[in-house]
Image (tube, rainbow, N blue to C red):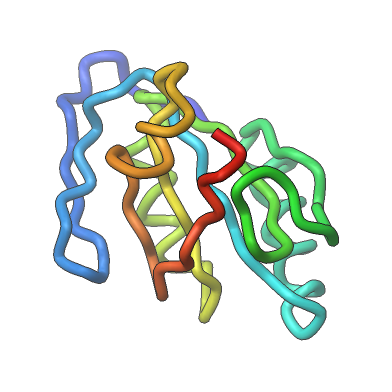
Length: 128
């Protein structure tokens, strides 16, 4: 996603009313799914990669890391935030999506720098 380098920081509000502040350089968006939503996430993942030009991870149909459901991640950056987060909100349908900063401290990133779109899912933090 290209962005105007002169764009100011943007703050958005998630569905729990928490501020999604664009205050970090890099982010992950984890999309959670099951067998019934596999077709939807396959389309979303392809669109994010091919049309939005963002890096996407594997389509995990097994549990990976702290994620207690099947998932895939998209990586986006400060410059992508203002366009990508609203796109996710508009296109996620009923999926739960975890958005978190990437600071190098996985525990903090998955507990303090988190914003949920849809229902929050309890993560398994024992891997940190």
